Amino acid sequence: MTTLSDDEKHQKRMQIKKAMIDEKVAQATEERGVLIVLSGPGKGKSSSGFGTVIRALGHGYKAAVVQFIKGTWDCGERNFIQQRCPEVPFIVMGSGFTWETQNKEQDREAAQQAWQKTKLLLQDETIHLVLLDEITYVLKYGYLDAEEVYEALRNRPREQSVIVTGRGAPVPLKQLADTVSMIDDTKHAFHNGIKARKGVEW
Image (cartoon, rainbow, N blue to C red; front, side, top):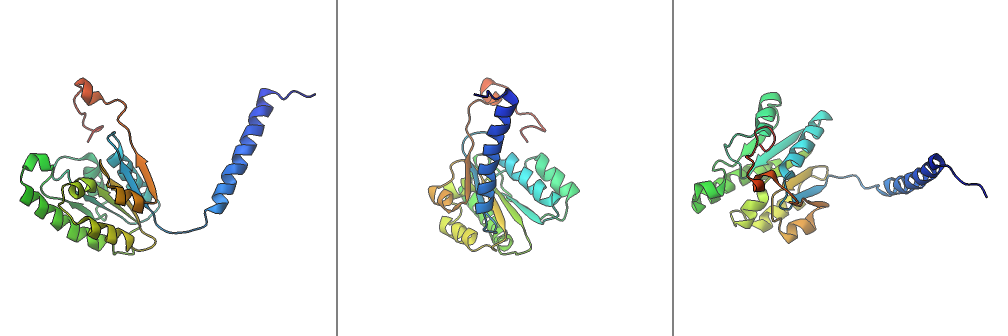
């Protein structure tokens, strides 16, 4: 009986794995945009969303961003895109963090204004990717009609992809999504008294 070397065993495992992956790739034949939900209590949801925006731009596609919570607060991603990629539509909900304004009506009006502009992006067939950053918060607070948001997402152009970020994504939104990633909060420096760092946290 011939005993395989470690290299031969590794090669055999990789051949089996490649065959499995190739089969899955071959089965994925539908071409269309996707709805991605990035939720959960952990760090990295917006960072992932913005990374995908950069990825789309790198391929020459048109992308757009709407920030529903961060407002005029300094944001490295927004600084970069607005300075280096001024052609990217970048909408900011004017009032910023709702726990800072502490004014429900002001926040509701700001969310509505941002949403009216967002609806136009979700109807634009030329836009390959739309990032709706932190929209889950305004849904949770009832500042937007959730059913109207879901309907707009369902009726967007077929080739358009949308990324939704924020904690506490509603169940109907996750059910509507093609991909849902829940980011856990296993450990965070802030919980140990370490200040948020510019260029890392924002």
